[in-house]
Image 1 (cartoon, helix red, strand yellow):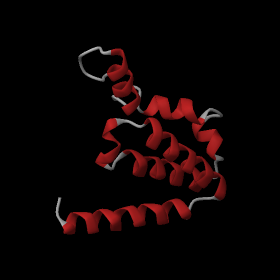
Image 2 (cartoon, rainbow, N blue to C red):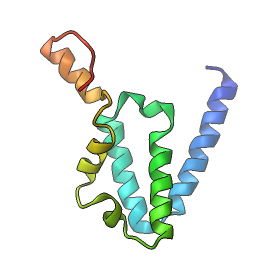
Image 3 (cartoon, one colour):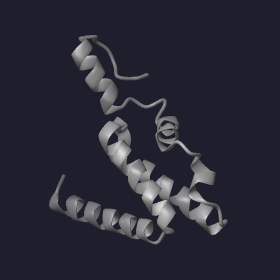
Image 4 (spheres, helix red, strand yellow):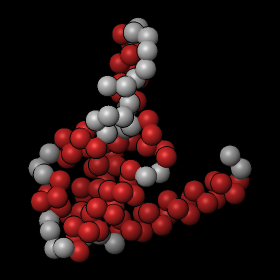
Length: 108
C-alpha cells in the first residue's frame, strides 16, 4: 500500500463521513451505533469498503422516503447488524476459535 492509496482512502472516508453528517439526526445516531458495533465485533471483510457505504445508501433512501430509521432497521440495532453479517466470519468468531483451540475457518 503506497502513499497514494492511503491518501485516496482518506479522501473516500471523509466523503463517506460527509454523507453520514448529511443524514437526519436520528439516522446519524443509529449509524454511529452500527459503526461502533462493527468496529468492535465486526466482519473480517469490513475493510473491503462496501458494507458501511451500503448502509448509508440504505439510510439515504429511507430518509428521502420520509421513514424513521427504526422503521427501516427495527428496534434492535445489534440484531440488524448481525443479520447483515450472518454469513461472514467476524473477528469475534476468530477470537472464539483462538481461545477454544479449534482449528478451521472462522465461518459460521
